[in-house]
Length: 377
Image (tube, rainbow, N blue to C red; front, side, top):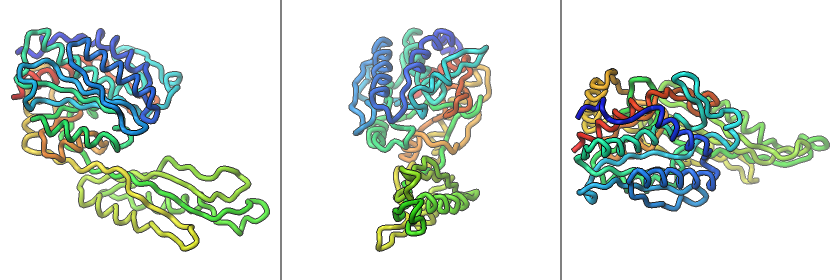
């Protein structure tokens, strides 16, 4: 197959993607994510996929599982996994509208990862339009909670992945000519400072400020960051009335390490901050969701070598790297399944008000995915 002949047109793809980007879908807004999933499901059905809607985890959006027609549909094949939730709150379109300048296009979630999902789905249909039969059946799983660490859909992802031979993840390409063959281990923690209330004007010294406690421990926690393990504290909320000494302050901590052992040692250091006094005051540390380290297997590297050759046919070099940002590829890679991540569109500044893509990469990355699907057996 001539991969350059795969009928994908970046301009037409961008027109379709615009609808997805302008339907905002922040993780914690279930109705918005449900609408996004319904739109993606309808688009896949229009392309010939059979689609099953899966109720989301409690309080979170629905998911969609899709299969493209194949004579061996019940056999292990290729699973494309992506997420439809974004970090951008409702109203971000006012500050980051969908707009195009030359080869760049901006919008909330356009790079992470609606653009990659759209390109991957289009690649499947483009092969069918060429009359190219994929050796293996192709399935798609679109989930709703990746941006908060996949607390509710990890089991679904792992169960679906276990039915397949290969996993492709169209997360953003962190470099123009790069794909991802491994990801660091990541852990999230809930931090709670419990103080003692008092009137901030009349009896300040009688109280113990939870906000002050959190500020002190926050600095100590972040100062533990070294080359092997990082700590970042954010999402801090404390107090309700300025004339009351705050009783409770809450925050979240993200820790990341290249090796699982380093993450585990970091966890032990962070848990040492947990102290609980008899009067109910203290500093509480609770471990939340964890993404296991994913180190490239022989199967993953074989996937990369195939992708590298296909990219060469498309006229660009392709490198690989292990990346710090977590994805659902952490789970499938850690399962030992051949997984290739970072196959999505080229762009920059994800999770910011400058998130954008290179428009041409919708077609080039789509053709790269199509080339893989056409030969994986």
